[in-house]
Every structure is written in C-alpha cells, then in structure tokens.
Length: 219
Image (cartoon, rainbow, N blue to C red; front, side):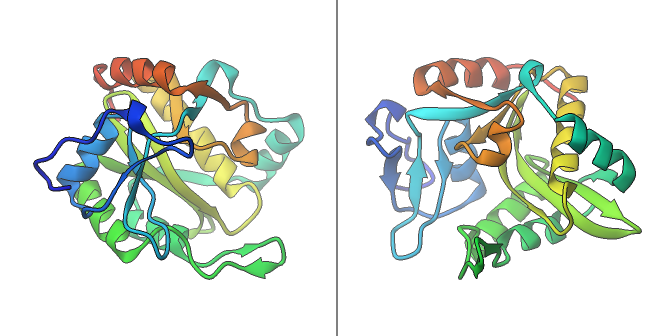
C-alpha cells in the first residue's frame, strides 16, 4: 500500500475488522484512512494493520452519562481542563507501559512511528489533545483526530482517579459547543460503556461519519 493507493472498501474487512495490512504511517495515508472510516492499530509481530470493525463504538452526546457520585468527586477534585497545551506529554503518557489487573503491560500499540505521525498531524491541526491538571501537574489526558465534526478518540491516560473522565467531559462540551453530536471511540471499553456509549453497525457508522465530516466545526 502506498500513499497514492486507495484503501479497499470497508465491507471487505474480515470478521475481526482487519481490512488490510502493510504500508507505513504518513500523515496523508492516515488522514485518508480516517476519511474512509478506517484506523491503524499496530500489533507486535504483525505488519501494520488497518481496521474497519463490523460494529463501531460511539458516544452520542444526548446519551452521555456520568453518575452522581463521580460528579460529586469531580467537583471536589477541581481539575483544570485545557486543549492542545501539552500534546507531546499526553501522547507520551498514553504510550507508556500501564499497570493493568495486577501486572505491568510490556507496551502499547502506540509505537514510535505512531507518535511521530500523530505529532506531525497535531502540528497541521488535524489531531488534538485534552489535558487535565491539578496544581499545575498533568494528571490525565486524551488525544484524537478531528475531521469536520467527526472526532475519533485514539487513547487516554490517567494518573489520578477521574482525571480521564474529566477530559472526556471537557471534550464532549467543546465538541457540542461546535455543533458535533457524537464521539467516535472505535472499539467499546467498559469505561465508555458506563458513560452511555454503544455500538452501531459499520454501514450506519459510515453514514454518520460522512455527514459529520461534511460539517464544519469550530475547535
């Protein structure tokens, strides 16, 4: 696959959502992928994989939910939320090994190539970050790709409880203010499912994606 080639139709993806593999991560290729409802997901010991899953996880803003206890805790924690103020630190934290279910993960899918490509896209204004601060210390963050009103969330991290939730809330409020109606989270996680996210069929997602990308939005 080269920068000039087109991706196969998303309907050709296998049951796991793998559409194709190979190539490299350049800003042009990555933007072409997102415009077509596809995202890269590197896996160790495999060529670069490109995904278009049969079910896409989305968070509709009119279904967004934060429970009462978390809202109370967030008021006490008093996070300061910023946008595009510490992208390099956010993606570095997202790529760091994580302690999960009692063990340290050896690594994440966010490779050096991913960091380099998305950092370049951030400089061009296609990729954005959200940061949560406490006492001037970065304690949480997320980043994603924005095409029109289609924000595709890529990864997030937290160093203190609820800091990533605070970033999601800040992102939803900012996107809503610009006219967006939903957030693309690609694959479902328990974290987002508790916030009201759900899965929709790929064909429906492609319609949503096309409409959202055609809608200009202020960031």
